[in-house]
Image (cartoon, rainbow, N blue to C red; front, side):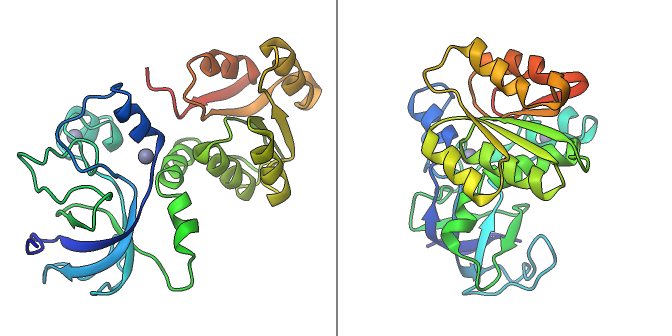
Length: 265
Ligand SMILES: [Zn+2]
Ligand SMILES: [Zn+2]
């Protein structure tokens, strides 16, 4: 077991999540070096470097505490970091479980393992006692993804919001949009069981199951739920399906906004 690096920590992994990104890695859609997979994780602090005693929010942390951590560390110097202020688009971003080469980097760098070595600059967050660890893990990637999206374009009170996609990111988008005061949340996706659950949880006012349907009929139905059939104030794409991007543009009202969260190219 290595000693914790300066400003870093050794964490005993309790949970490692499987994310859509892992499936892209598996299918060879993203470059992958020799790596310990797992960029979503939750664990117990095993050892802290003496220089590290608070988490990213300033809360005291110590050995034995339960923590989660952001998967990536941006460089702070490239154009994306320093000029565009988009650290998630950093050219030199180091991501646990994705691009930390075990041959050239600290080998304990993924959450699908017994331990991970968190480096200086990692955003560590202490999980308060009483929080269900599985529920926290459900937001490991989806939570930060949507917090970032809503920082860029917050939901305004009373807006109509369409969320395309009922995966973890889509469900997080729906929940946060409702909490932020969306008047009407239209959740579009599949499977029906997940839409039903979203409805029961109160994070979707209307659900549109698009599975196996002609897309034109589904889009017409979605529009029929928007005020005066004119489209939504905000459309959030969380599907990963390229066709959803153009569909989302057409679901936004004139002057509304269509936001891409899952399709990167
Ligand atoms: Zn992820
Ligand atoms: Zn950078």
